[in-house]
Length: 87
Image (cartoon, rainbow, N blue to C red; front, side, top):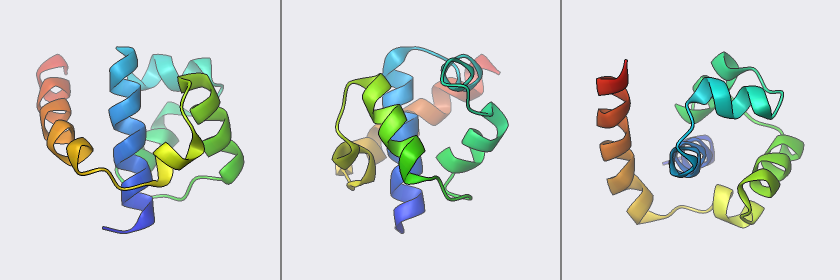
């Protein structure tokens, strides 16, 4: 797993913990939800400034967004399934 994928997985995991959709969460941060969807899928790069901003808004450290966490992989599968049901 590369760093883009780790950051994307963590963003999705922590965003899901807020209970907000991509659109609501990222619009509140004044970030483009469609672009951030690509970030969550590990397809695009994100700036350090955005990582810091998102971590601050989530109340976590930037370290938590860039560090691989096995439990987020398991939970990510559950999150993906729940989001499919919503759509």
